[in-house]
Length: 209
Length: 116
Image 1 (cartoon, rainbow over the protein chains, first blue to last red):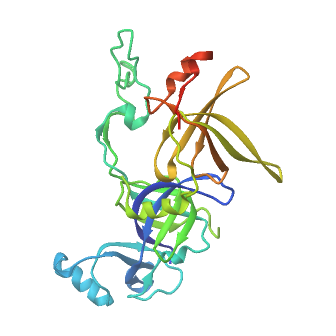
Image 2 (cartoon, one colour; image 1 turned 45 degrees about the horizontal axis):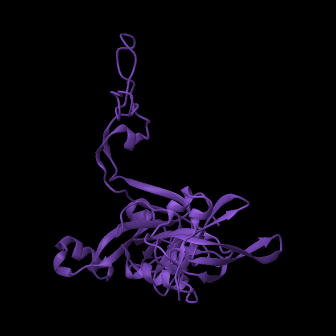
Image 3 (tube, rainbow over the protein chains, first blue to last red; image 1 turned 45 degrees about the vertical axis):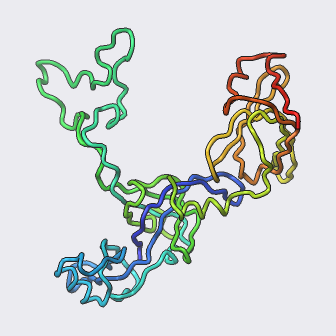
């Protein structure tokens, strides 16, 4: 299995072997259940679908209940697909123990929604001056030239909706794994608020590490 | 805000042999210093002027005048580099942060000692 689902629990700091402080994000990863195995013949590609966070049956829709029943798994709130080079069977359990020996992971999640944000927050622009009678305090400033080219360049950074998008953080170092408590500690920050469901994958760009 | 899971992780990193310390205390901080292969302990003495953070992330700020220059060092309380803390004297202070000492020189930096 290439990854699993987890919940972001928050951040703290721990000390590594050298005694250095490391800021870590605590993730409660798994246990997940394989709810469907997609095959090349049937679906056109190979993947395993994982279910995470058990849900009461009466809170699920009937089609979803049928889907879980087919796999012989209990209903789960979240499902996501992961590529799976090794053979996985529907009903199998995936725990954080699968990341044993893995040094780096990629973590994907939905970022916190910021609503309609200005250019300072959204694009890290500098804005105008706050003092000496500044009239362009948090404004974007000029957005182009005059009669030539007489239009605004495509992709011009402007105010707009920020956050609430899926973001992947690549190459986050694994600090420690606790298979008993299903805990995974990664170095640094992870997108999303506390309690967010995140997808944890073995690092794409650090294969074999 | 903390969750039981994070509290549990923090608890594993906490030191239980720290002395009870208060703002204004004069203290000696024993710091482990690595020089190449060798490790030795350096003693840094000064006044505790601030405590920040809580649980595993708590730090202390210790101020001293070294060669006429004010020096402040921030130590993570639960760091393995921090070998020992010795409290030498306690003083009577009315603030949680003694940042006003930064603006004072000479005799005015003295704090009233607590009679124990």
